[in-house]
Image (cartoon, rainbow, N blue to C red; front, side, top):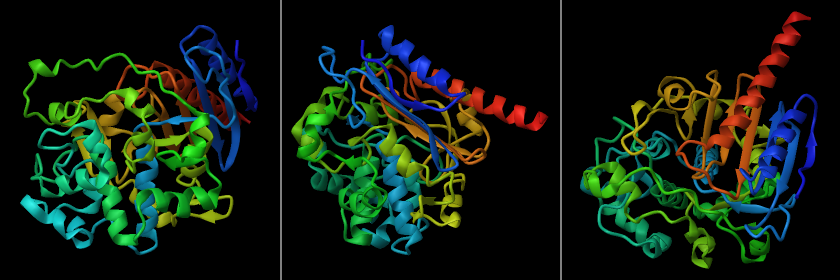
Length: 391
């Protein structure tokens, strides 16, 4: 059995034990968890297997496709560009990308793209997975569409399109592609093991994802014009596409980031720590605060669940508390990836939690394992806080 490596400071040894138990009983194949408190990693653990045949262990530097966890870095890139004055989240998208104004989208703002409220959550005309991976052509198609609802009035999860849309805005405003910008301005300065796509030299350490159970929807029995069907059904998502060279080479910052929990945590810990990681400043506190400007709070037109979105992330409280009741509800932002990877930034406690795995589970917002890890971590944090209050 591949054991769990790394360190977990007391009292978080319980978390290491929980991960060990889930690997031993087969719930997990390979996984990693990092917990950062006030700028220090108090948990950095990994274990299990790299491959389904269990011929290789999951190593310290193993990475995998993290699906929508990529969005947490893509939106951070836009916030970095905002902080540097290269764009403003309240700018109309068309200020930087004039072609986007077609078909009634002239009022769409950058923050609408960042909060899933732009009305461009999918492709209007039939499109194949191969065509989606041709990012310039697929992005040009989005520019021509009409929004599917009035921009800014509701969220509808931009499952795949978010990366194409934000990537084009960033490229127009900064002259750098999303891939380049993240590498040069975020991952590079921090020494963070995160990249949009994956360089070919890193492919040997990319653990292949195991597809999850099928989605719980039968599209054939649903309204073909609903945002849910049009977003998730065109093209149908197939987790095995993440194994393709074309996927790894594409610049799709909604879905094809490659990282582990340590790489994600290294970047995202900037949010609970005033925008700075080990002296490297990504954001001002003023820009961090922008994340918490509520953009929507109600039923998401694509996910179908009540969600509360700020600028770039899901927020605690409101509809989120109904849909994901196991998350902390104080000043917190979060998101995760298809199959269960998860990132929680708790500003109330200056905590950053990240979890990445290769065996995808069912569920849209986290899987049953991510739920258990989060519940255990915040139970321990609350017990610690209560203990210190009694002293």
